[in-house]
Image 1 (cartoon, rainbow, N blue to C red):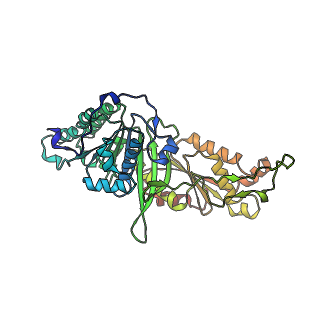
Image 2: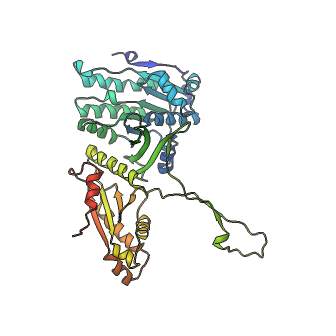
Image 3: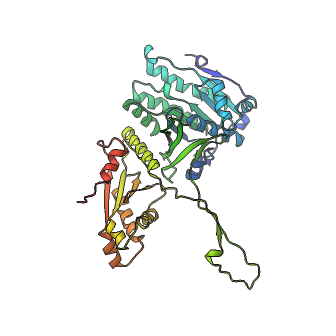
Length: 425
């Protein structure tokens, strides 16, 4: 099959082999502030998979990745199944003049025709494999630094998953040989077989970005959602999640506020005291939150996202719930806020914390009994009192429940219901 029957080049830039070379592996900006802050960017030559439902902002992420590439004075090759005008409108919504970049040979946009009904061919898997293989000749021709494929869903309907893995791995290896950083976009799996496909691709990627959108219950409008980034190779910082929304002219924006800085006046004379009363120190009144502390709605979304990830990949996780007896509060031994603070001081940034009624609930994304035991030990150390008598008294009012996800849990409600049992055995 002739590749020209499948690919439509909108603009052909002038080739310049002298600017095309393999570069050493290093972190480069992704254009997504959340990813750049958590991981330091993408690995040059890495392969990343973006998974999300329709209208969750996945194309905007692809365009922000492309925009960052242009700002780094590099060429991006953008494969798309969208109409040209639709892609340009999306780009303009984040203040990105895509048409101008195309005319300056900074972005090469390739329209990918739909494969149609692959089952009508004698060898449908081979037919779909050719679509993936066709990427490499286009790369060799236009020599980009970055690549976006938006989106892969129509081209992953293989009958044999092993053939899909083989075709994907071979294509990625050839792309990576050129030092190209690639972002493949795929739809949210709606069936178990689709989940198997996504898992097959994610386990052969450098990292996975998952978008879970939430609807405005009153208007049925898109109201942002949760982004979760999960490393597969490198990125030892671990998995991170955050709320996000789509902002005009900015695009994809995560909702993490930072600790305000304290403005302290300087001494006017050498004789003036170096110390100042707290009442004399002006501070900003804006609120801030810790990056691993979530309100109930966001925590609920993260749990559902993690459960869906378990269903499709088999990767387990643990939820630790610490229940505080009201007697501890009445006796002045410990408040729920103090327990929450002890938990916060004891967890890592990748753990997720939420207060629900009289419980502090912690999501630990990697199931490890040693991690759970260490967490409990650290919480004891971070309680307000440190003497043995205090710890002995307060410990009897704190109950710990540890739950590992399994096939009986279908959603966040199933899991949280188990942590709300008041009688502790």
